[in-house]
Length: 252
DNA sequence: ATGTCATCTTAGAGATGA
Image 1: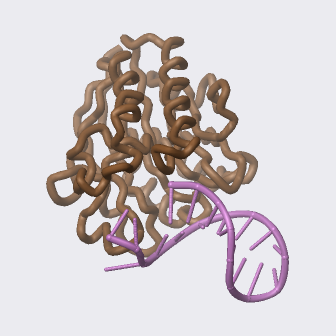
Image 2: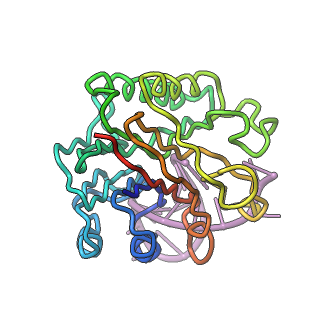
């Protein structure tokens, strides 16, 4: 089975990149983030034509997440208690429980949005209490957290910034400690499997990126291979994130 | 690193968020 996660930075702006990517990469399940699209306006038809069922959550201008699945969408959930923004979509997709997350950015450590980010991560951990860590489950998406110093191009450039603070990392570690592994992907280029590069200042071509798009999986998900699809970050009108593609077996 | 991109408002440049 092949699964993937991709922050597309607007499904509308990216549809003509997404559709051929789905055909070429042929994932069975895809988690999307930053669709920036109301659920009712989601482009279901061309995606369904490729064999996917669609679960979309979105209010319009900001945020928005989705799951595309060739293995069904059972028990769909699109809310996280206490947090009305469209940042979570979850469903049982065949043998695998899948959650697509778009964790709040946090802006700066002294911004109220940073507290919101920590609260949101804590709520995601609370939600996990309703699941069994011995069952096949993945949480994947844009976590807006670089778990280790090596997950940014230069930790010194992040003094006073979000994405690398101990509290944010603890929020992600609490998920891992419940019973998830942080799947390590082969990098597309260079030594670090970065998944995001700012559009500005030639950051992508200098490989000044961050690993903030994560796939967290329980132990009954066996990882065969995982890679960052750097090609998808190239070319005409790319997202600022690259997809992470993971080939798995499921031990049932 | 601060060099871009996407969206909305409301008619074309500015505000917002990332």
